[in-house]
Length: 172
View 1 (cartoon, helix red, strand yellow):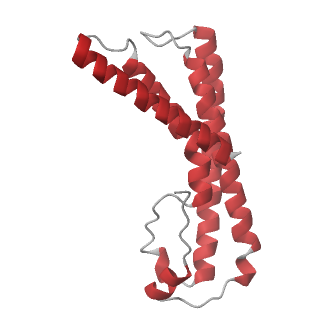
View 2: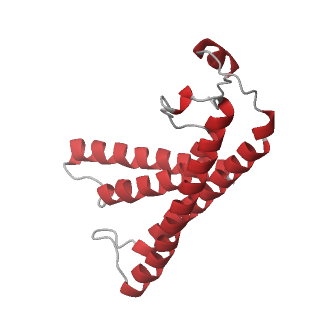
């Protein structure tokens, strides 16, 4: 599901880029651009980021700076990782709860964007979808860390050994 949401976000990103291109050309040629282009990009990027959260977590697309935790043995590092992910899951559940409440607030208030009159509650739904699958990805990561804990070789590797063991994959 994370891959599907990421592909939807990619298509939306291409569409946004096309709209911005058309806006720039129209501003240059006709001195009048696409109405509401700034709102489209603002809210469209919110949707793009929300829908790609889970894919980013699953593929390990973020940069991890762990210069303190790298000093520990692998099993200790794994325990700290499990604890950190569990705390993050709890925090993200709280954020998701408040976002779900915000859907009701925005719906009852009837708030819309100023130019295109996009209902805000629909945009918050995309945030909630992204957060939900982000939490699921974290739960999967914790499960894998717990189930693989007994198989961890408790020997610190050198940077060269870590680099050799790391498999870099890309869809490109």
